[in-house]
Image (cartoon, rainbow, N blue to C red; front, top):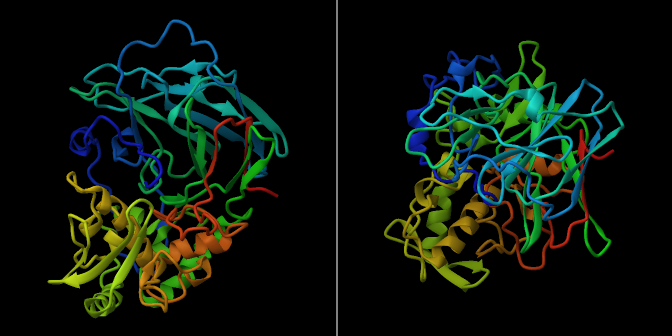
Length: 451
């Protein structure tokens, strides 16, 4: 969210129609200070959502031969994991919008699905898995053509991928691991991914995203066409358990932060969910009135004071609370009081994506939502958003304590920890930690983090 659209061509309603499982409850009512326990199921427990599906818009048969090289980008996958064998999976859409996996020899593999099939069919691991070598070794895969909506997955062990092809869809759907489904077939695997897109116009855009969850720690380096090396170091090696511990500590405020940590039956941390992903689990404990007092104070303040939103192309946009909603000059939608899920997800309630949103709205709402997550709207200087340095973020409660701890546990303080974490004051360090270059020479990914 915020950087890549993973959901193209099939509506959420259409996917909901092929969901196999009854919505998975988080389990029996338990104390909010206990983690969520993963209990993997089978194909019938898979739930299709916008977050774990990738949809082709081209269902034609794959080419009989692979297109001649349009690019030549080595992907160096460095195994820094001692715990067990690691398998990589490279997914995306080719230049004709077909689903594709990149195999270890660089060849494209096109997973198939019978049109009208709504039962997930597993893609054979032998066709898509890239086994990495032992700890300290590097496996290089050559990316010889452009991919959009790409991801490189890494799992300690093996991950399962599936395909469906709903009736009326323009192409098959790839069903990927779901971090927030405690009954997903991959629930007991420690895994993570990076997101990327490559094309002839802009080269590569690659991102270490922790918006949805913190799992297997990853870092990366991009060698550019000019000879420099850009780094997104990600979380420190071994950060998963401290992240779980931080959520447990945060739970002392009575909110269900500890339940963001998903564990196995032996209480070993598997991943930590972003709060918006945790709240999407049916039956999850809500953050109830966590933001209520803060939101009320914000709306009181900006009833008499002006909130100035600094936008990239529309300059400084003045906003004030009018008739109970934040109203901004030139914005064709106003902002009612948000609740927790609206703030954490930045895509519902007052922050939903309206079909008729004008350009001003599209630049204003991410900045207001980011200000709520970072709890900067009531700070001195917070009347201008964004303007305060990163040292001012998350310094009061309520705030997005998940995002706060992602940044605290990262090597250099950067990371993409909530939608629109790439909102930054002009001239400041990009908090998102994304890398881009028009002529990339090599992408290195450190599985387990950069030592």
